[in-house]
Length: 124
Image (cartoon, rainbow, N blue to C red):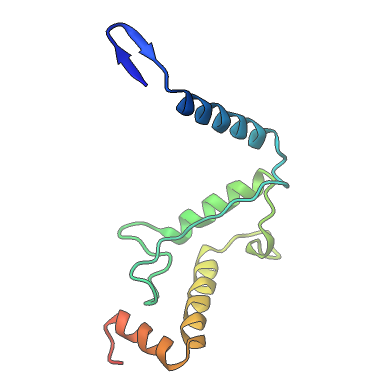
């Protein structure tokens, strides 16, 4: 699509895609928060060297806490992310993710450990 002279020409497939996207957004808006599923992605580069949840000059654990607290207050089920005291500990969540990352490397046996050490710059 585009503008030709003073006329707007629509591209049918793009209009259809936009209409479908808007319908899905409306459906999502009407879906109860208890029925919605979402994912939170944390930056971790380079992979395999314990950099999960880090970012230059940013407080990732505190940002994670604020985001998850807002989601929880809106009715999202956060499972075990909410402590027995009702608090959300961003540091603990990131530590658990790092432990999982390390476990995946160990499950790869010697090759997994070597990959992890070579990625971190340590001697293999």
